Each structure stands twice: as structure tokens, then as C-alpha cells.
Image 1 (tube, rainbow, N blue to C red):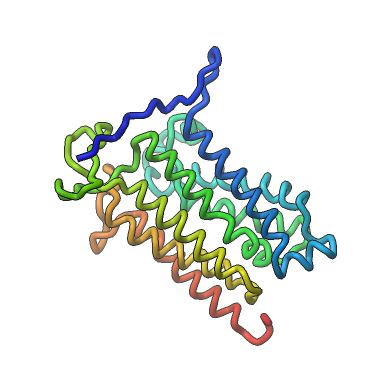
Image 2 (cartoon, helix red, strand yellow):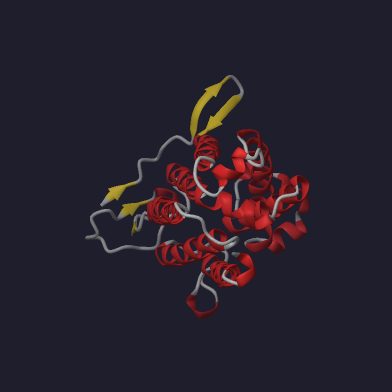
Length: 270
């Protein structure tokens, strides 16, 4: 069996200031998004919009600002609402204690969706044109986040067969059980695989809303599968039908994605 390397979560300390690896992975995620978004401007249909001055690197920088706020605020509030509503209802001030950890992808996604709606309204762009633009650029950021989870030794997997070559013991779990390195599974599935599929699909123009729907279906489906290998949150366990909270949150994503794609196929969307 493999043993988790027990990385020091602090990458660099300068006096009283500590730079954590998890913060670095967030920075890498935002840098990857910015680079991919600028590259996307060189491909249809955005290359023609860029030629008209409707999209530009400056617009992407503004978009990034909205996105960062959406990720951080949505991720934190979503965690408090989805995973520990009772605790944070009794301790509302601790919602702001982001340094204690606790971020939800699904909350972050809702935060980004809201931020993109505000951005679209402020810049007078169709909301789904904005979400279609960012959809293929997001998975590499998700991959970076899973690297941070692995470095921290958090969000470990469920018990795995001892003869599984990559089964890993996570001392942070408080046991010596071999487990699935579910962070790596999610890095590969929701990160690299989803990026490859969406980037390939985005090579040619799609109806408005189609790429947004493809992202929701792709992420929701892959995360649903990955959750079978990830240890459920200790304070929640498995819920109705033996599904985890993460899986239940993925179901409306997939349904919404299908609805977006069906909606995009209506005659007036061409």
C-alpha cells in the first residue's frame, strides 16, 4: 500500500506570513482560466466578436474579477448551507472564517453563475453567451483544486481493497485503512477528461446555451461517479438511496444541463 506523503500545507513562510499550497493551486487555477480564455478568443465564434471589439483580453480580466468573487463567496456560503446549516445558523459570524476551511464546489458554481449574470447585465451581453464562453476553460481550474486537496490530505476516498496497486493510507483519516485516492480520480475525471471533452466540443460553433449544458452534464455525471469512491462527509454520511450529498447536488446539475441543450436546439436559437 501507498502512504500519503504528508506534505507540509505551507509552501513558503516569510515572517508572520504563510503561503499555503492550497492558495497556490487557486492562483494556478485562475491563471489557467485566463490563459485558456485568451486562447478561446482566437476561435469561432468569439474570434469574430473579438474583431468587432465585443470581446477582448480586457473583458476577460473583468470577467476574472467577477469569477473570483463568485467562487470564493459562493463556495463558502454553499458549504455553510449545504453541509453544516445548523452549525452556522448557531454561529453566523464563523461563516466569514474562511481560513478554517470549508468550500463547496456546487456553492462556488452557483456563485459563478450569479457573478456571470451580473457581469452579463453590466456589460449588456447575453448571459448564456458568457457562460458558454467560460465553460471549456473551467475544468483545468477544478483539476488544480483537486491537487490542493491531495496535498492537504483531505477529502480522502472510501476503503479500497488492500491489493489495489494505488490504494493509499491517509493518516489524516485517523485509520490505517487503504483508501481510494479519490482526489486523484476527480483530478483525472472532472479536471483533465472533462477539459479534453469540452475543449474538443467547443472547436466548432454551437447554439447558445449548448456548451453551458454540456459542462453541467459532464461535470455532474463525472462527479456523481467519483463520489462512489470518495468518503462521505462524516457528519452527513450517506443520505437517501445510499447517495452522498455531493451526488444529490449533481442530479439537478445534469437535469439543468439537459434542459439547456434542449432549449438551445429550439429554432430561434440558431
